[in-house]
Structure formats: structure tokens, C-alpha cells
Amino acid sequence: MRYFFTFLVITACLSACQGPETSVATQLPYSIKARAGEEQAKGFVFHDRNENSKKDPSEPGIAGVAVSNGTAIVHTNEEGAYELPVANDAIVFVVKPKDWMTPVNEYFLPQFYYLYKPEGYPENYRYKTAEPTGPLPEEINFPLYPENSSPEFKMVVFGDPQPYNITQVDFFAEDIVTELIGRTDLEFGITMGDIVGDDLELFSPLNQAVSKIGIPWHNVLGNHDINYMAPDDKMSSATYESVYGPATYAFVYGDVHFIVIDNVIHDDEAGSRSYVGGLRPDQFEFVSNYLETVPEEDLIVMSMHIPLVQHGESFRQSDQKKLFDLLKGFPHTLSISAHTHFQENKLFHKDSSDWQREEPHHHFNVGTTSGSWWNGMRNEDDIPHTTMRDGTPNGYSFITFKGAEYIIDWKVAGSLTDHKMNIHVPRGIVANSADTTLLTVNFFNGSEQSELSYRIKGESDWKPMQKVWKPDPYYALLAKRWEKFRKMDFRAQWAADTTIDLDRIGALPGPVNSSHLWEANIGTDWPPGRHIIEVEARDRYGRTHTAYHMMRVIEE
Image (cartoon, rainbow, N blue to C red; front, side, top):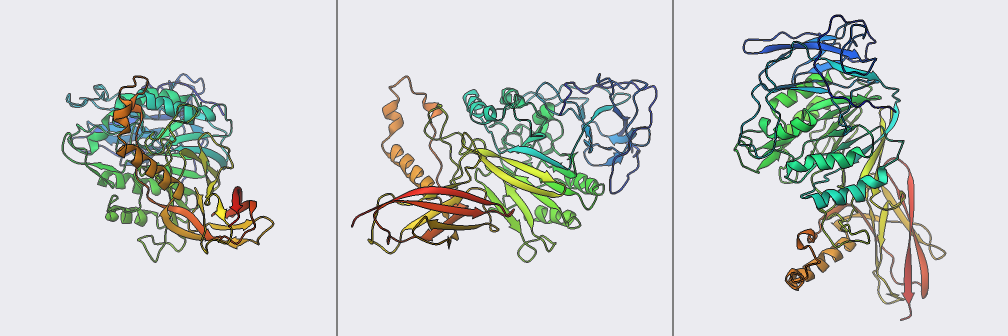
């Protein structure tokens, strides 16, 4: 892979040459004329052969590339030209097509957009936004570079880094980023929102850390990434836009169309922190228009921060239904979110939801890099044991694509690649003492399509385990310890010790029911001594993962 470090520039073009066409389901017109009160944005998408980000006379335009103003979409003509209407607060952007790459800046952030903010933003914003851009340029041109893409590729997904201070950025850099440096098998990465925790000045140091992985990095806006001083939802993403570009956009790798949605609806009151999951009408318009260009056989990945799953109407059900209506014609779909700080594979079925196809829709709510908000006691590297509330250790996901098929894997930070589950059983089981002894397995990336079984090696045959809906027993134990610390008023006892930074010691949140927990009653009818518990977990992709745990049995 190769990437070019450059910023998008606005250039004058003397001529355009015919370039290669891209494959789309519906070829849209290259021009939509401005109406009263609008201006006409125009320019070229071109092959930047000399990599100077300027459209030189000898550089050909690229036909069939989607360009958008945030709602409407056009396709470039044979000369690579496009025309779009814009208002006085708009972002014009190119949809990265298959086999082409946009420039990236020094932080590996894709430079695929032009902010048109002639008047800037209100002065009462606490965090910096885009400077006034002035009049609309004569041309807005987008350079692209050939990419040797393959239908098979791998991406990495971060959920909620969410640092609230520079120390937590350090946690993230040391715990997550460091172990990804030097990898050559990753095409790109994406952070699923809550890039930072309310302090938007942390965008820069966070981006510096992520850039060390050395691959293009896309981003999703989260509820802790918005500017709370915004008077309405559309303007709440102003600071995010000044760093990352449009909060609702799309890009293509291989046969996969990634549609990124800002689904955080900010309360229409400056200073309010209230929000709900959903989409504005202009966002639905963009999604609908883009889906017209997607071939039916391709895979659509909807990327958002707040999960589609309703938890007390946290995502508006009416908006979920509208999204499902838009996707009903596509047999290959996946949606990804973060936000909740626990991991869940949710399947929407036709007979129990608004999903309309026979095959269920898979919604993956990815666990978080920050775990339980960087809380918990420190490990040997002085980084919190920040296990999530469902018992999933903090980490990140890999998604491997092959055409319209995909496989999702969870990687535990700082652990071996094959660490797929935690096994729990009481220590020191007394032989023949009781009828019930629970074996519990937290299969981190498990779902209703997973099957688990166990055996006591040399003592029993394979037996199935039952999926349950309850808290992880290990995490419940951790939470009880924190509750004891609270009752002991440990912060007051430690306050006199100047070597302890109390702001860096946070209590773990209470446990929640886990969607990937299995149990079996193994009883106590075992001979005294050490025994090996072997667990096999079959995932939704047909793969089998094996793990072992030691069991100690003592005399009555």
C-alpha cells in the first residue's frame, strides 16, 4: 500500500482528459443546477499523476465518481467534471471510489472534502471551528491516486477511545496503538465515535497517536465529539468537521460501501447536553441517494455511533424503520456502532422487528478501546484494568472482507490473538459436596448463532453449554470490590499521599447482563486433584475456538 501526504487544494483547470470509469448501479447526471438562494459549486475529480494535488493540463479526469453536497449526489462525466448546488454552509466531498485513494494529511486523515463556510461559526463556541472560507472558489477539484485494491482486505475498528485528559490519551496510545504499529495487513481503520470525551482540544493529540499506525483513518462523530454550544443539531458537528470533514459521508473499498452516519441528534438549545439517536431528513436524503448508486451484489456497511438497538428509545424506532426500508432491496448488509461500552452482536429478524428481508440483519455494537472509560486499578504497565460492564476486556475489532462476506474478530488489548473467551469456575471444589457447580464462559464476540460445549479432559465427554442473560461473574466480583473500596472511603485515606493522583483512579461501573455468556452445571462428582476444563466455541462464521481452564477438586 502507498499513501500520499497532502492537503486538498482548490485549483484552476485548463483542460480535462477522459479517465477510467467506476462501476455503479445507477449512473447519475454530472450536474444539478443551483436554485434561488444557492450557488453553483463545480470542479473535477482527477488522476493526480505527479502527486502535487493540483490539476495540471496533462492529468485526466476520472469518470463516474460520486460527488456530494451532503444531500444530492452527482457522478462525474467523461472529463471528470461535476456541478452541485451549495448553500452558504456546506461541505462538498468526493466519495472515494473502488480502485482509487484520496490524499491523506500528516495524521493519515483522508482529505476528500472542501468546507464552504463563508461566514464561519458563532463566536460563542468554546472549541475552535473552521475559519471563514470566503467566497466560493471558481473550482473545487479532488485529486485521486490509483489503488491496487482487492475484494479481500482487513480493517481495524476502534470503539470510543474517549479520553477526558492527556493522561488517558497516553493510556490509549500505550495500550492500543502500540501493538498495531508495523502491521502490514490492514487497509485502513475507523473510530466509531466518542473520539474524545467532551474536550475537543484532545482531537489533535489523539490523532497524533492513531497516525503512528500508518494507515488511512476514517472517523464517526459521537455524542462526546459535538460542540455543545451549537444552537441546533446540524451545527453541533462544527468542530468535528473542521478536523475530519463531513460527519455523514461514504467511501468504497473493494466491493464494500461504507456509509458513515452522524446519528447523534443534539438538542436544539445552545449548551444542552441532551441528545437522541436518529437521523435528520437531509441525512436520510443522502443515504437514499447514495444507495441508488450501489450494485445489489455489493456489501453495505452502515457505520454510526449510537446502536440501532433500542434501549429505552435511545435510537428513535421510527428512524430505525426508515433505515431498514432503505436497505430492504440489498441482500448484503451490516451495521456497526459503539457508544454503550459493552459488546453485542444483535440480529434483527423479519418476524420480530421492522427488518423486511428473510435473512436477518447483523448489527455489531463494538466494544471499546477505553473499556469502562479507562477506570479500574492499574496493571503492571500503569494502565487501568478497564474491563467493560459485560465482562469483555477492552480492545478493538478486526473485520476481514472477501467480496460481500465478512468475518469480525475481537482483539483483547495486550493479550494473545487467540484470547477469545474467559472461563470461570469456583476454586477448590469439594468433591461430592453439592449438585450444582456453575461453569461460566464469556465468549466475547459470541452471538445467538454461536454454540459452546465443554468437557473435563479424561473424565467426561463433550457436553453442550446453555446461553444465558446475566452479568459476567468475574466482572461482578470486580464491581463488588470497588463498592467495598467506596465504603472504606479509600479516596480520603489516600488523599494525604501525594504520590497518588486521585483524578486518575476511577471506580468501575456496575455490571450489566452480557449477551455472550454461557453456563453449564458441572456438579462436584469429580475425583480430587487437578483437572483440565476444555471449552470449544463455534462462532457465527463456522470457526471453532478452543480454550482451557484448570479446576482443583479437594477431598470432602
